[in-house]
Length: 240
Image (spheres, rainbow, N blue to C red):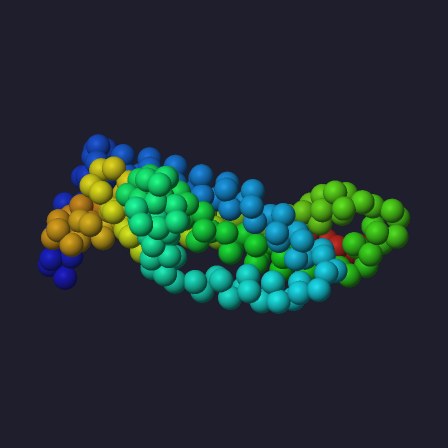
């Protein structure tokens, strides 16, 4: 306990006084999380809509695959990307290995399953008659998609927050494809690992505190969304 207390006492001033190294890591972490979440939303929302609204053969298999990909080990994603991006790999000529772009790609891939699976689940959880009635009234695909996203907005927002949380906290893929280069392409999670391996525990603890603070903010946001969803359902039941 004495060691933990001493490291905490040393870590707090690093946060309070704005350590430049720590600030640069926070900045890059937020950048990675924002870009990865936005890219995952751009790719994943249409796929989630197709799974949730579609009537094509294989839709259930795609949904099962999307749910299964939520448990995809980040290290395997990093290894797969590494083998593709090495000079001898299919995309080696792009020279993306050990770059910030590789980190963006890895985090997008890891955030994508959350957007796809949770968006599809949110849409499939809508009242059965809602979308059927819209189809009967002549709604086109774009109108159906807009209606589904609006009515399932709580679930869709939760999907985006989960994707953002994944982008904030993941470390395995970043270390493999980004190299975890000091002060260059480190996120809070990978930097904490770097400092712990270097036995600079006060820096690792400071980074961990900031990371936990960001995750707590996300959890509070999810709680607010859940409360709003419960309020909407309660008002709906009362009106009916």
